Length: 382
Image (cartoon, rainbow, N blue to C red; front, side, top):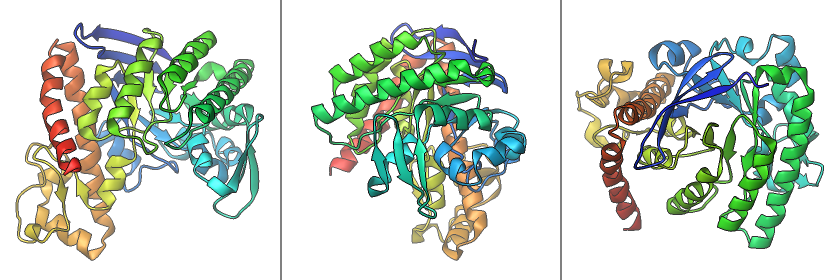
């Protein structure tokens, strides 16, 4: 019944990497794909024209919690839905807001029915249920929606993770049943989310139970919550093979550039993270020659491009010295130029990776990618 259709073009025989096409009501997405995060209906620092024309992003992510609080899903629906509201003609994925709600700590209370929470903006009390979060995302007109889940911080005991996983399963069943009753559900897809903390047995139990929903896609959540990178990879490697081969697999909230090929090697098709845009605004830039912390004095007279190998407007037009000047002066333009570059860098990694899968060269791509990954881990340990 879903408007979403996933087509696998080829699969790497040595790994789980896949290259495919994700057909949505707002265009086709080439996978594997990294989705820029537009929390409040905007990728900070960039216009939709930048994202579509310069970066050729096919899908972006928006946040249900923040848009629910401001300006409100009723207002967005009256104005024609999120695509029209933010003038974005391509696909949109919205999360359920669960991660944000569970990060409120003392401002929320979890029950079997949902989550009672207070707005971080004005203290108003609200309730998210499996059904209400589906209704909110349907009002947005999202192409891909997420069920409400409980996201535990790390570390958590096995008992706590078990209780949380069972709650997530119950919410997924309730939310999915509600989604199937809504006529608007014909125009979008709802993904359940595999939880279970950092426990292999719970991840397996959760994934196997969610298969009963026969959903058009599945997500792996509860990562990037304080665990090591190795543990994130382990949970992904355990969970992904349990999910339907013919459905898209989405790992939420990851990762560093050198980690992206690792997730893809586990058979992951979709990823998102605030890292490229957040780090850009803080002056931390990813390049083919390594990281650049632009505030460093060594760039004050550096007339070279940020990354000679990058085709983005920033690298083709401006010097490191100018970018450093903008950052030091607190100019808004820096955030735009830096974000443009960092997202270009992430999207280019995914495009090169996809090409390698299609050409049968992904194992070589992965080996080359693991070298800086191992070096980065060694640097962190020292």
